[in-house]
Image 1 (cartoon, rainbow, N blue to C red):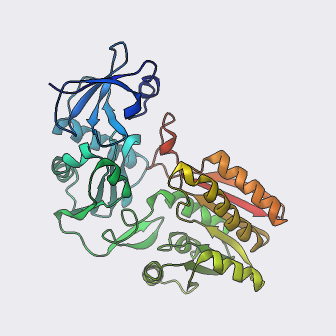
Image 2 (cartoon, rainbow, N blue to C red):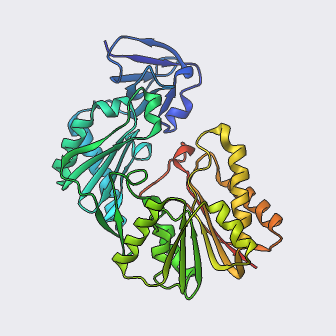
Length: 388
């Protein structure tokens, strides 16, 4: 008999509103017996049908609900969900590179699929989805006929699902370098070794927005990674300096400079915090400073320390901007909420001794939609501040 999961009284409200996650401590009882990772039916305390999702007894997230009606998780079901997710991106004009599936936001919890030219990269982040990997590959091949499909299920969250990390070719052939075009800029992507699935697609709209602030300006791109912001800024900037602690990342920047034929971009390797302090000591300033650091907090327990880190880096950033210039700053940690990030920026502005005004606020690109009922899906903060 398939699993039937009955929630404690009142615990169904969040799930009915559209959230996917049923935590183990929200469950009153479990009836039936099946394999771990199988499809379980979730009911309210009084027996009202809520939905279906994959169960995992090893995880604090016991069930991830993704079926709200009476369908089953057949291949045809997945074909339709994948097609709908892709069609949404196509209607927005995405073509060469975009996030095709964004997990919970596309009602496919724990599944991420990114498109890089003719290659798809997949992350399976839960037991239930991982068990259906072969079927998902079949669906993707039939629907989109990619040159290759690569798995990048090397995220630490798999540990919480009792799964080992897993990477490798799932279908076809996958090149060591894939050239994509984003905002008219060529970028080299390494889906096998690059961060996440190879490239940070969620900032594409924000990288394009940067251009309006960089015409004939000097730009400092901090935590530049593969240089997405640098390449967009270089289109009309006077000079761009790309800094990162990773030599591998800066080699990727150099490759992207070559691909686009830029002559106005230079790189510098080092710890960004230390470099910014050295720049301040030496009296260096730029017209535009970009701060796009990795997540400083990956759990709620780290928020206090992360807040200090974000404030420190933003104070330094503000001090390095010429009068009338811009600080472009972001955070990709959902634990650092919009209100908290804005509060930090207000404190950083005050402690910097500069007068600062906010000119633009953005979030992740539309191919990374967020659910209003699930704040975990709304994670990227992007602020453009003018330093008066």
